[in-house]
Length: 264
Image (cartoon, rainbow, N blue to C red; front, side, top):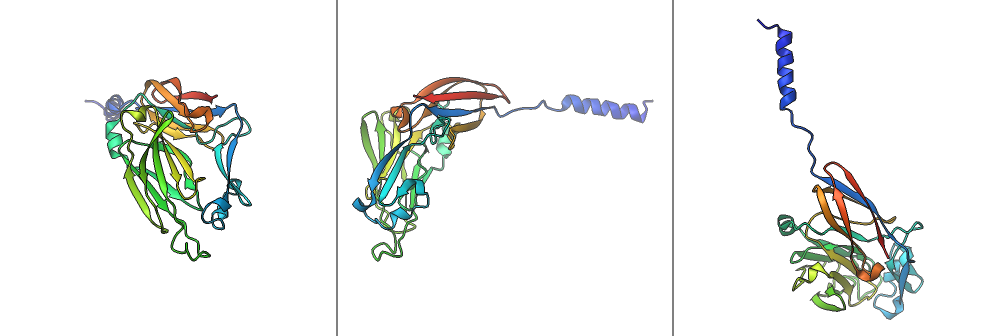
């Protein structure tokens, strides 16, 4: 007759054998996007556009100085990190994820489209909300008029997606992204306000959830990437003349692949 201790050890051994090995959802791609060039700002005069007293109230004072408004086309940290670059795995088409993508959201706040850069999914929603109103301007008490105008861009050509006015604070639009003829493979999506030209945002089309937007220092991290060799692109709407720079990255289960992505 087996002792109680022997029986306990036997049960423990069976449990140990039956326990599953540690599993991973995939690996991680992390790194930094750098740019050898200099920061670039495009200047506009508030006085040449509607709401010249309200728009300068933008909280980010690096975007305004007196009557000048700056569109920060390229932002580079002291060590060359490129803010706002989009890094994305491009050799995976996840139809289920694309079909379930809730949409890209943009907010108009103090005459600024936020975020400056991001991603879109073809045929899926693109949403814009106007949060601006000026209590000191009788014409804009109910809302500062913004006119979001979207474009699908491929090379030197572009096509309008939508052109809709949002006259009141709280007004929203919700329209599908409309790349045609496979243009989403090579192009990007641009948003501009027809009332305030300095309000602009830019978006890279993606086909899966494996992407990231570089932080202020150019760093990024993409988690849960399936193990294997992948094509990864780094893209910025102005640095590198809006061309995608492609890299080969080998991802291992539970591991971290480091990518140093330089945009020239």
